[in-house]
Image 1: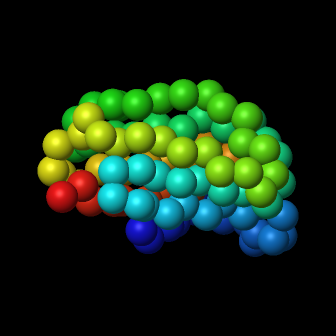
Image 2 (image 1 turned 60 degrees about the horizontal axis):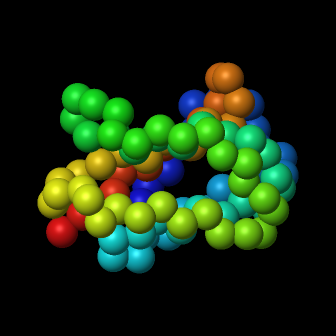
Image 3 (image 1 turned 180 degrees about the horizontal axis):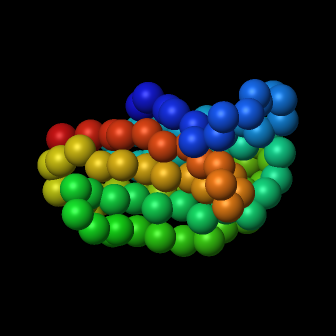
Length: 91
């Protein structure tokens, strides 16, 4: 997955989000706890949206078993004006 940040400010290293794709699952890790909104989108729709407290160094696993073969976008909102965005592919 390739990530971009919407923020123009420099990252301090305190805001780290790491996402791994393991076949039909996304595994999300963070080094600091925060409450976030997570969205998964296809070309036109929001398919999955949750608000979740991401604890530090613990794994949040999202099952993608219901999604068809396609490219999807993952958005993890760090704050109102800052987010990580990345595309992933389901075979």
